[in-house]
Length: 275
Image (cartoon, rainbow, N blue to C red; front, side, top):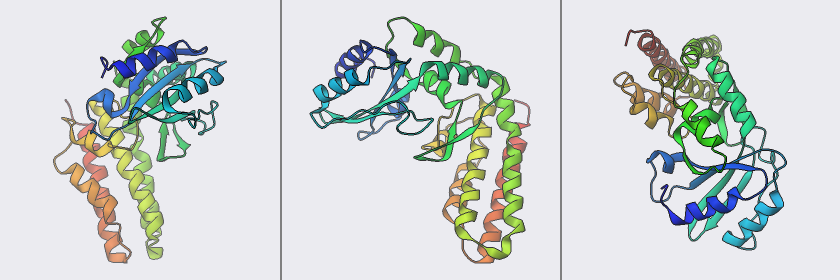
C-alpha cells in the first residue's frame, strides 16, 4: 500500500496542512489483512491549532462538494474526529490523532498503565494503548520532520509492563462472572450477554499481552487471537460460542457461564505458563 500513487499524493497534500505532523495508513490495509471492500484508514497526526478549513477544502477537492470534515473532538473524546470520504470509488477515512496524546499513551503503556475508555462505535471501549498500537502496526505515508517514524520505531517493542497489567486485569473477568452467577435467578439475557462479551475481550487482551502483540480494538479481535502462537486449542471456537449462545433459560445461561469460567481458567493457565 505504501506505493499507492493515490494514497501517497493525498498524504503529501495532507502533510502540507497547518497542524498536521504526519500521515499514516492504518487498519487492515496496513496490516495486509484487508478484503477488497476494506476502507483505507488514514491517521492524521496533528498538533493544535489544526487548520480544519484547509482540510475541508482539500476534502471537497478530492471527494466532491458534499465532503465534510469535523473539528477535533466531534466524534467523541478518544476517536477524535475526521472525515468519511469516497475518493475515486474508494472509502477513505481520515481519523484525527493528537500526537502529544499518543505520546502520553505510549508513556503510560510502558509503565503498565491503561484504561478502557467509552467511545461511540466501540462497545468494549477504546484502550489507551490503541494509540501506540496503531503506530506500531501502521505504515507511515508522510512525515516531514521524522517525528512519526521515530515514535513508530519506539512502539515496535511491546512493553513488558503492559503485558503484566493485562494479565492482572483478568480479575475483572472473574468479578463479572461472579456477578452474573449471583443474579442467576433474573436470567437477564441482555445483561448476561454484555458481561460475557467483556469477559471474552478481557481474555483476548490478556493473550495478546502475553504474546507481546498489539491489539487495537474489538473488530477482528478473535481472528487476531487465532493467529497467535500462544492461543490455546479451541479457545476461539469457545469464545465465539459463548458470545453467540447466551441463552434465556436458566439451564442455558448456566451452561454458558461454565464455558466462560473455563475460558478464563484456560487463559490464566496459559499466560502464567513458561514460554
